[in-house]
Image (cartoon, rainbow, N blue to C red):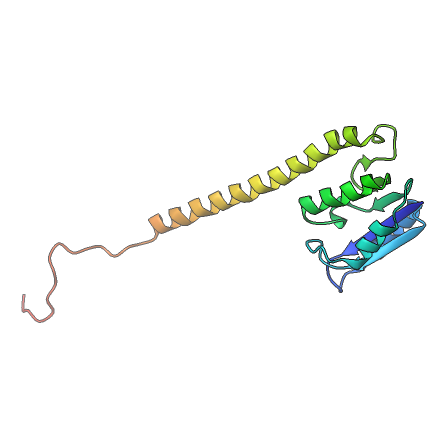
Length: 160
């Protein structure tokens, strides 16, 4: 059975687009949640993980709908694989139900490094942007006008 999971971060957002995509993918049951992806206390996600059985497929619209944390995604994926269930992401090319993605060691060898590279790339990008802004601040401090020191002190009370 295909089980879908749709999550949005705020109550102002709507899971309708994700739910429509999951229904089009053939999901018979869809768990919808309005909670931050960085939090672990998400009751619908835990219900879904507890309901997974051997042969089921967890389907998400996008990988970051599971969690914003790489460590949490890896933990969730471990739980899915422990239950001998499959996993499919509709927007990324991640599908453990195909012959290429069937064996979890091969899947782990291909997907985990990509996720870690993406995480490393993000960390590198943030670090690079931080260095760029620090350099700009230093340059601005060097260029701003400074008072010119006088060669001799000025005494306002003297005549000369």
